[in-house]
Image (cartoon, rainbow, N blue to C red; front, side):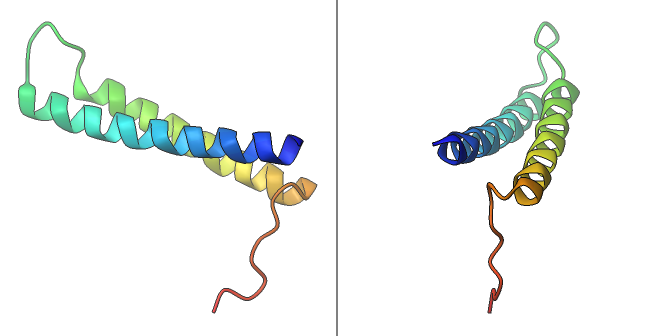
Length: 72
């Protein structure tokens, strides 16, 4: 049960990363003075990406995620 929750958290974080990417693109094109800068969303995306990599490493080391032994 815990491994399913772990994988759902990874998928949700991936969607948040993609959302922040598109949000930053929107802010870059809009360029309004009273809205938050594009770097806010890019920074969030970098933090979420690092968190995903960290969680995947923990998942592989603990056995929650099993990598594909033969990808080709």
